[in-house]
Each structure stands twice: as C-alpha cells, then as structure tokens.
Length: 263
Image 1: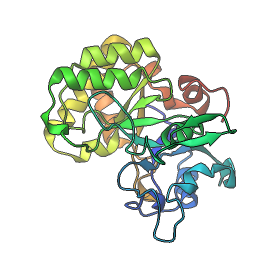
Image 2: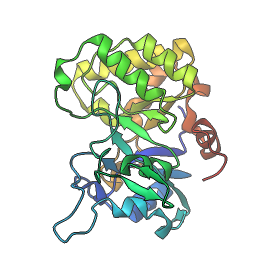
Image 3: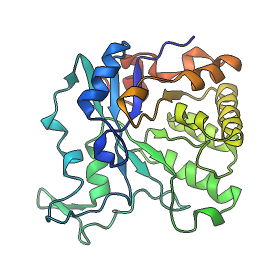
C-alpha cells in the first residue's frame, strides 16, 4: 500500500459547504500521521466578492500570514481550488474584479485572481460549472486542459475524471508531463457513479503509461475525511501504478513536485 504523507486537497468552513475548521482538519491529520495538508478552498462563483457588511468575502484567503505554518504539528500549505471557467482555460469568475484591478505598489495593475495565485504554495484548477460547459467537444475540452497546464501559476489539474468532460487523455497527460504538472486522483470521485470511477482509472493508467506525476487527495469536506484515500489507493494498487510517480508520498517530495523547496 502506498504511504501518503500530504493531503493536498482539503476544505474548511470557509468554502461554505464544508463542516470543519482548519484546526480540526489539522488535528485529524496529526492523528493519522500526515506531515501536511493543503488549505485548498474554493475560489469560484459560490463566493460573492463583497459581503453584505461591505467586507471582501475572500479576505481570509489573502491573510494566510495570520495562521501558523504548523498546527498540531502538521504543516499547513496555502493552496486554492480555482475554477476553470471556459474552454480557453481561463481561471475564476473574478478575473475582472474590481473592474480596474488592484494597484500593486502603485505601478502594476493585476486582477484579484492573479494576486491570489501569487500568494499560494500551489494551485489546483478544476472544472465545476460554467456557462456552456456541456456544449463543448472533445477537442475543446482537451485544449482547455492543455492551456491550463501551460499556465505557470497552476500546478495540479483537479479531479478531471469527475468533471464529466471527455478529453484526449494522452494529449492532456503528455502536456502535464512536458510542463512538469500533476494530475489529481481524487478519493471523493470514487463515491460517484461507476462511469466516473472507470474514467478515473483510465486517467491513472494513462499517467502510468506516459510517466506523468499524480497526487492522491481526499477532497475532504469534513475533518473526518482528511487523509482518507482508501478507494483511490485501492484502484492504484489494482493497476500497479508506479510508486515513484505519486508526488505526495512525503512533504519534501510534494514541494519539489510543485516547484518549491520549503513551505
């Protein structure tokens, strides 16, 4: 059985449809011997830019400095699960919020999306929903994922087997390999229907064939799921997935895979 020491994809109550705090997630991670977890909150249309009291809803995501790097002995990594929002591979619905962007040092004008990604240890880009998403072709879906993989601020493609969009697996996996990016094998996807599970398996088989690195994640929406990858790992065992291609077997290895030397 593979030993996974980093859960790169977890959610807290900040995401508004999860049930635990970061501290609770870290406590459960410590109990099962994880070295690190990623705070990978959603950045999508579910979060309104401005709350009723006039404060920015995304403020906490920009304030990771308020958290210690370790909670209950577990390293907390700053991440985000950012939405892919069109077939061109653009990210987030807030690229133009505010309309004129933010002034960085009085000179550069950047979008909120860019500013957020610049503060992350790594970023996961996933498809959930966007206007017209069900009208695309295999070619469009393939180009979309390849464009996202070429984005230097994205490190992981999130749960592609569960997105419901057919794409050329070999072309996407080759692009991931050539760009040094990772494909997520998401344990939560194995709670979906059999078609999704089969697609996840085919993606993993293609990654193994082409030598593409993966991360195994829980996609936990409560502390009780943090660090639980059993279904995903069982599938990887069944196909004899190469252990060396699993990037999150250690914190050091995971950081190296996303281009960082230290958290």
